[in-house]
Image 1 (cartoon, rainbow, N blue to C red):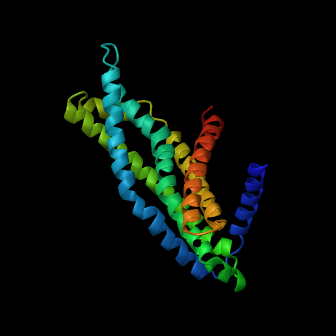
Image 2 (cartoon, rainbow, N blue to C red; image 1 turned 120 degrees about the vertical axis):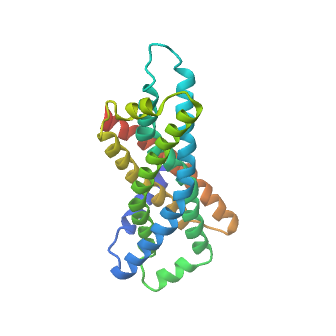
Image 3 (cartoon, helix red, strand yellow; image 1 turned 180 degrees about the vertical axis):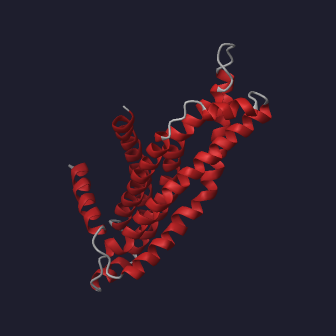
Length: 246
């Protein structure tokens, strides 16, 4: 019953968040601000993690495929498809669920416990739309950009690690990147990133908005936001994979 309660309240929360903004100029300014706070500030961590994961993927493939009948360009194929299909969308989203989700939940939760949201309601402002919708739109606009950065940096990290360690030549790795390339994999990853961005921002906003108590409860809401959004990312990753690649 607790699950159904939160599911119903979340649905109403999402409905209220998509009501028409009162002033479009203010809304656009908020979206740009959230794009900077939620998206641009995450480029560094996304690039670092993607670089090392691309390097690790290439080295692990090389050490586990040391068979004479397997061509060396297979390392480029494996690194490319791993980054495009799974890591750059799903794993990056899980990382951002911790960074961005906790930020959103703690920010809105603090506003709730300090009664700032109550002031917005008294003024007749749709507090859900005013606080949450810019975050949803901002993150959904920035997530595809972060995924593309992750793809490029991850593949570069795999190429650099393979060439520097001597497990594959630059020519063979690049040949693997081009071999049997499926452009739809990029579209698939970008579609997943949009869904995951919506889940992260809306779920984090939900738990922050309905925080009750004080600073301790704000921390608990942030934890719930990260856990629930991570589970939903994994669930929808399975659903989208079945729908789009099966």
